[in-house]
Amino acid sequence: MGFNPEDIRADFPILQTKVYGKPLVYLDNAATTQKPKSVVDTICGNYYAQNANIHRGVHFLSQRATEAHEEARKTVQKFLNAKSAREVIFTRGTTEAVNLVASSFGKAFCKEGDEIVVSQMEHHSNIVPWQILQSDRGVSLKVIPFDEKGVLQVDKLNDLLTERTKLVAVAHVSNTLGTVNPVKEIVRMAHERGIPVLVDGAQSVPHMKVDVQDIDADFYVFSGHKIYGPTGIGALYGKEEWLDKLPPYQGGGEMIKNVSFEKTTFNELPFKFEAGTPDYIGSTALAEAIRYVEAIGMDNIARHEQALLKYATEKLSQIENIRFIGEAENKSGLVSFLVGDIHPYDLGAILDKLGIAVRTGHHCAEPVMKAFGIEGTVRASFGIYNTLEEIDILAAGVERAARMFRR
Ligand code: 7TS
Image (cartoon, rainbow, N blue to C red; front, side, top):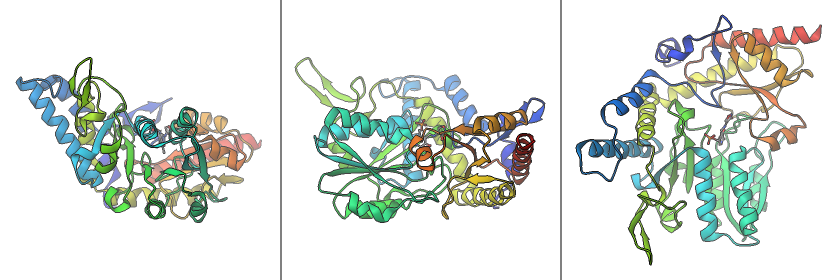
């Protein structure tokens, strides 16, 4: 496995929580991950020792906070293998990063009749911002479908790309199906026609090595809270050539060079896109989270989570009338399922009473539910601190719930 999850667990105080007297089994990592002590300590330490607004101050604390924020940017840059720190924009998370691109790219490049291509397995965060552009600019959305196993039908992409396609926006990993999409191939196909690609990395960055230059994505976005970092911080990677061409998303302090009532000039990258006081405490805590996962090793994390996925799939398969939603060969560490006609909320509520935290519902991916003709699923999603024993507890819990409903 490359590392011992028991050692990792000791770094996460919340995992000691008892739920209704039972040990917490936290399997809702796709929604958000728990935080190691080092991340929480970084937040506290920064507030205790180096809090001051950044970039504007000549004084000691302000300079120290500025350096930490800019170091954090470099940490994200290296983590994603971006060419330059100017290509890393701090945002509130994936959602804000997609909205930033949709809004700015839309303003600069989209007009009535243009097309944006998304996939059928997108999280609402990578659908709705493009729909807003639809009503603002009159662009239309085209959708890459997936098959019955939840595999994206990439061969259909060529037919969807036209002279009117302005951008392709696709998830690297589906939060509902777990499918890992061949984003490098998608980028290659789009680039053959000169079309830029945004990749939603919310569910990939925490679980595998991501190299934005290798993928050749034009934009790549992720959230800090899904990679053991704090809430309220995430990043947009954008190729400098694209970010240079995009107008600012929000106006305010920090993103300007000069302001007068007659004319305002904008700051250079990355500050052009960071209006107002940025979350400089969050950025440094995110950098600490990145250091934390890198010390474990992204390849070790991927191997561990693949082992959990394999074991969970085998164990849960033994349950009568279980139906997996998402059976791609290339899957990330999560299982979405239904058992017989038990409502996912009922199953989730019983698992909760056993101390097991899973997510139920449509997981903000209603088009996926529609494609399968279901209302929702139960989803167990794995992280670095999960163990095979926890999978046993999950499988026993699902079996117990199934028996209750069979009676
Ligand atoms: N994109 C994907 C693929 C996601 O899984 C999520 C969140 C988002 C975007 C939005 O991220 P945010 O941090 O900006 O909110 N996914 C989930 C989930 O699966 N359950 O809760 C949130």
